[in-house]
Image (cartoon, rainbow, N blue to C red):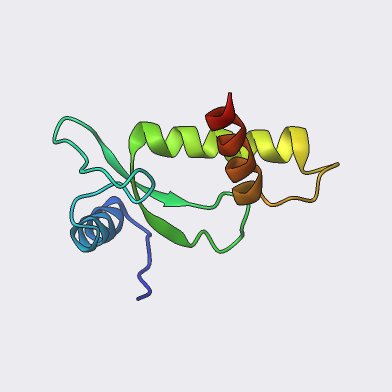
Length: 97
């Protein structure tokens, strides 16, 4: 599906549609987004097309954005490993410790 996101109404419509498809769950954490939390559209800031990836809980979205920024800022210029692989390696490391 392709929808234009020119207005707040457009954003709200797409967010509601995706959240329904995701059964009310945060696409990143897999947990139901509580009513007192804010669902937001997630997109890749480093890609020109601004393709929406899904709906995340607001703080999850902020954490993801900061993680992507940190990868780009601190690792990607010398380590060609994609972010998902870096995160899997770090998760394995944390579980071993």
